[in-house]
Amino acid sequence: MESTMDSKRSQSSRGEEEELISTLHKRQGLNSFNLNLVKYQGFWYADMSLVATTISAQRHFQAQRSDIFVCTAPKTGTTWLKALAFAIVSRTAVDGDSTADPFVSKSPHECLPALEYAETFAPFHRDPRNPLIATHVPFSSLPKSASDSSGCKIVYICRDPKDTFVSMYHFFAKLAASRNMEPVPLNKAFEFFCEGASSFGPYWDHVLGYWKASLYQPDRILFLKYEDMKENTAFHVRKLAEFIGYGFTLEEEGNRVVEKIVRMCSFDHLSNLEVNKNGKIAENTPWEMENKLYFRKGTVNDWENHLTPEMAAHMDLITEKKLSGSGLNLIYACVVDVQVRIKLCPSTKLIVPDSICFPSMESKRNQSAHGDEKEVTSTLPRRAGLNLFYQGFWYSDVSLVATTISAQRSDIFLCSFPKTSTTWLKALAFSIVSRTTVIDCDSTADPFASMSPHECLPALEYSETFTPFDRDPRSPLIATHIPFSS
Ligand code: A3P
Image (tube, rainbow, N blue to C red; front, top):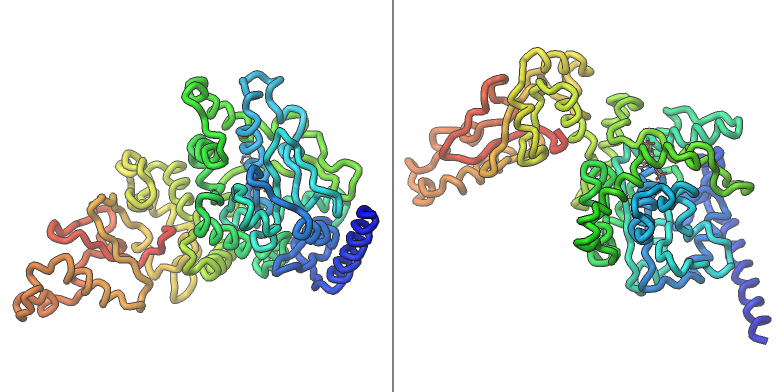
């Protein structure tokens, strides 16, 4: 009796879902097999069936306290995060010999069930040995039991939108080629991505959903960045393991298990495994894909090889607008850009203050030579009136780009965009730090009686190029208009 009622209930809810899905907005975008995207709850899904399985998960899936969700937007490091999380939770098998490596026989994608790829209306199948569940579904569309009530853990990874786009563009282009279809041209793909019309886009909204949730529920949601993970993978593996309740023991540390996991999940190791060179996932289904599509370069900053400076600046502008006031910075590649340049060309003097970005660059900085700066600045794009485009921003003069400084812990940077009240901020900060002379308010003690606020502070980018930055020993203040990422 009960099963008949259940089946009637499930038939009627299926009918409602089908009706709802048929009314959803569709459009062209950056997507698998050039399919039309379908908009559901503010995000673009690859097709109707994915919306149907997502609705089904929203209605029927019950998260458990022990579940660990691996959540990502496509092309932000899903494969890597899945591999790391799986290696962590199943690490009794990680003893370093190749037979114990779980990725020798299957792609990381096959190690985790995916929430929205589970069969619609079938109960979600959990592997009792594996608490991990993968999903691309945005935070706001997760089943309620996962987003608020069950106490399960959520791990999210994001990536610079420029690299995410470049990765996605190549992925879909190769996917199209594998089915003898025309790939979407780069410019069109860029337009789609910027409009938010990409698989599980708008990308920025996807990131913001998880970011904001992680601020409210920091004990339940871990927010990671691809670039940070590349910079120090072992640190983040320890952090991830600790967060999901699988922290490493001293004995494991002694046995260098963290390093083994890092190596086992590295791009080089995974991409060279036979299964990832020649294997396929979702074989004999419409979603069949070659595993090798998930491995391209695995680097930070590859956007430089594919986007024009104008495209990069355009996307950075969108990112700044979208993330404004959120406390999240995703324009990370520019910072790394300087680092990479310094690494490639150790004598370059395009230096970012140590205490802000690069704790270990001092020795390289000391090798500076003038010729290299000229070489770099002479290659930068120019435009009448604005003159010089550097790291996504326009500078009025070549000399402004060539600044040398080694920041000290005691420095206080006053950073502003021109005409946003730089003068006022300089005056206030200078009055505060020099107030023993200002506090009595008589005119001789007023520093501004004889000097403009601009004369009270040295300016980072107006200091003389190639000479050491000149600090006033009585004032820790340094002014600059240089963008944060530079
Ligand atoms: P690139 O196209 O920039 O090389 P996803 O896994 O979310 O689909 O993202 C794919 C991106 O992650 C690709 O980026 C891919 O090369 C990179 N990637 C795959 N495995 C990786 C790994 N083990 N370490 C670092 N990056 C990896």
